[in-house]
Image (tube, rainbow, N blue to C red):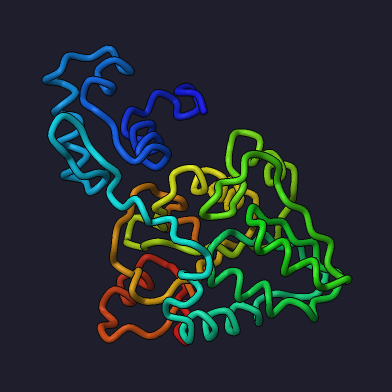
Length: 255
C-alpha cells in the first residue's frame, strides 16, 4: 500500500503501518515524512493523546495489536444481543432490494437470517458474509475485489471500493467499533475506507452494534452521523446518549 493512498495523512499512514507491523521507530517516522526528530516525537505524542498508539522508548506500538480479533472470538462476545439486533435488522430488508453488507459479526448474523430472502442482490466486502449469503439460491451475491486482510477476512485496497461506486444500493448494514455524536468509527483504517464507499452508495445507512460501543471513539471515522438513517442496538442502562442521537435526527431502534 503506497503512501499516496492515504492522501498524505501522516497519522493514517502511521496507523496503517502499526496495524501491519505492530511497531514503528521515531527514526522511521522521521525518514518517511522528512521531518526533524523533535517533530517526529511530537507527532507520536499527539497520536498517543488521541488514543491512536502507545509510545515506547524510541518509537511506538499498535494501540491494540489484537483488535482485529478472529471471527470466532468476536462471534462469542455479546452473542445474545447480536442475535436480537440482527433479527430486528432483518425486518428492514424487503424482497427484491439491493443490499450491502459490511464486515462484523452482527452483520454476519443478519446475513444468516437472509436465507429466505427472494430476488435480493447482495454486495459485501466480507468473505464470511458472502459465504453465508451464497446458501440462498435466490440471492445474487457480489463481492468486491482487492486484498484479503487475514484477521478480518475483509477485502481492502484501492480497487475494493469500485464495486460500490457503480451500484445503486437500497440499504447498507454496517457494524461499528464505536459511535459518538460525530459518527460511526472503526478500529480498522483500511476496512473503514471500503465501508465508507458502501455507505456512500446507499439510500439508507443502518448501523448494527451492541450498546457497549455507544458514546465511544475509535481510530477512524467511517460514516458521519448526518449520513446514518438508523442505529439498531440493545438497550443501555443510561439512555442519555440515545436521546442525544435522536436530537440530532438519527433513528434509534432498541431491542
